[in-house]
Length: 466
Image (cartoon, rainbow, N blue to C red; front, side, top):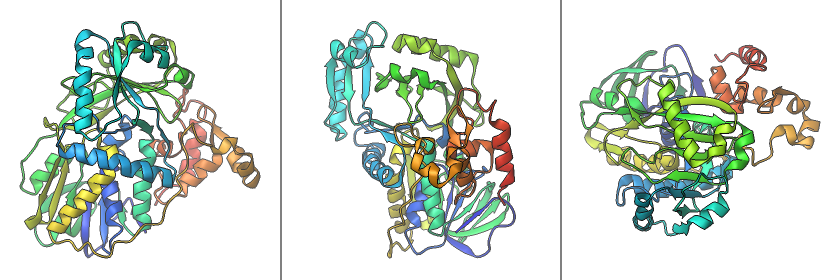
C-alpha cells in the first residue's frame, strides 16, 4: 500500500487512474480495488475529502425528492442502502433520526401531497403527511405557523469525514496508490493516456474524472464540452452541543428552485447545523462566509427554531456544490477513449457514492477494462467520531489497557491523546491540522483550538508525513 505526498510519481502505466479523492472518487477507487488491477487515486490537495466532500450537509438521503426516473434517483436509492450497510459494518457513525419536511404557508402545505406522490415514484413508500399537531408534539421547539409536514422516517445523519476516509483507507490497504498534492494540469489522450501533473508524468490506460468542482475542466482536457460546473456556495452555522436537545429530526423546508433550502439538523458529532445557503458564484475557491449569508441563515433559523438562535455558535463555514444547471448527475462514458466523467455530483453524492462507484466500474468495462476476479475487501473498524456511540474517553476498559485514551487533549470535543496518536499512524494519515480534525474532532469544539491548538500542532509535527 502506498500514500505519497511529494516527489516523482511511480513509472509504468496504471490500469485505471481516478482524478479526485473526494467521497465519490475514493468510493470509485475502493470499488476498483476489488479487482486485480493497478490503480491510482490522485488529488490536488494534501488530503482526501478536502474539497466539496468535507462540507457536505451530512445527510444519508432516501432519495424521496429526486427527479423520478433520473440517474440520481436510481443511484441515491441504491447508494443509501449500500452505504447504510457499509457504515454498520465499518463503524461509520449514522443516526436514523428521520426528517420532517415542514410547511409554513398555504402554498407549501398544498405541495405536500405531490411530494409524497413523488417519493412513491422514487420507490420510497414510507413518506406520509402529518398534521400540525403531530409535528408540534414531535418537535415542540418549532416556531409558530406550522401547518403540517411530510414525514420521511428513512432519512439519517452520517459522518461525511469518516465515510471518505474509510473508502480511501480500504482502497489503499487493497493496493491502490494514493498520490496527494498531485494536480492534473494536462492530458494527452492515447493508449495509455499521459497525464501531466504537478509531480510529473503519469500514464494510465483508463481514466475516471471525479474532480468535483473541476470536473468540467478535466473533461475539456479530454476534448469534451458537455457541461459547466457553477460553484454553488452553501454557508452553514454549527451550534454548540447544548442546542442538541432542541431538535429531534432533520427539519427540511419544502424545496425551491435552488434545491432543498435551509435546513436544521442534528449532527452525529452532537451539535446542530443550520444551512446551507445557495449562492451561484464564478469563483471555485470562494469558501468564505459572508455577513449577508449568515444574516440570512439567522433569519431562516429564527423562523424554524427560534430558541436555536439563543445558543452559542461553535463554527461557521462554507462549502461549494458542483452545480451544472441540470437536475441530474453528469456521468458520461466515452468507451473508445477509455474515459468516464463523473460530473455534477451534488450534495447527494455522499449517499450515492457506493452506487456511483459500481456504476462507473460497469461503464469502464464498456471501454474494455477487465472486471473479472473481483474479491471482497477486508472490513475496517473506523475510529468512532459520533456522540451516539461509545468514545474512548468513556471506555474504562480501553483506558485501563492503554492510558493514552484517558488523556484528554481537546476538552471541548473530549479527544484523547490516544486517538490523535492513532490518526497520525493510520493508513491515510493527516497532512494538516484540518485533516487531523476530520479524523478525531480535535479543535472542532467551541473554542476552535484556543486551548488545545498548540499541543495538537506539536503532536502533528512530531509525526510529519513523508
